Each structure stands twice: as structure tokens, then as C-alpha cells.
Length: 95
Image (tube, rainbow, N blue to C red; front, top):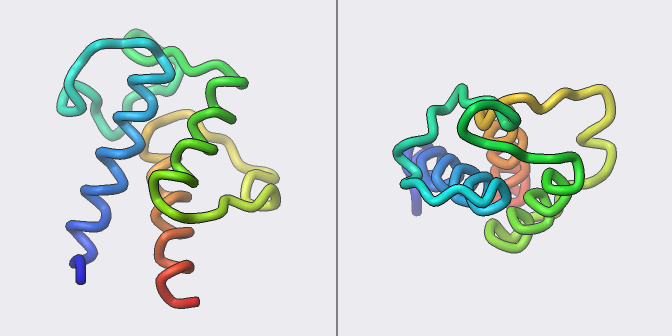
């Protein structure tokens, strides 16, 4: 069983890896800061790319990200995505 820190680190790395792939950037995960903008100097995630990221993260993490999770929220940094994925992974673990 993973500790909370191990789980957060795993999700953090997954989000960064998917964001790098979607941005078509060849860089190590360690080059992406938690507060890295999804659309900034390093990453360049479009709205369609964001949808692709969410689908890939659903597959990678074995979760479903329901549409209502996105209502009224803004996702501007890697940490924003990590938080929502982490919450869904935690919910799936208690369901």
C-alpha cells in the first residue's frame, strides 16, 4: 500500500510526463516544477491537448474524471491537475 507521499509523487510524475508528451517537449520530469504553467515557456498544452491529457491520465491511473469535476474550475498549473487526479484516485480507493 502506498503512503500519501508516494501516491502524490506518483501522480505528480504521471501528470508531468503526460504534459511533457502533450507539449511535445523532450525533457525529464524533474525539469517540470509543480507550479509550472500548462501554457508557458516550457509546456504548451492547448485546450484539445488538455482533453487528451485527461483521457491519458484516466487510463494511466485507472480512474474516471467526470465532467462535473471541471465545472467552475481553472487549470493553469501542473499542481492544479495533480490535485484533481489525486482526489479522484483517493475517491476510487475508498469506493
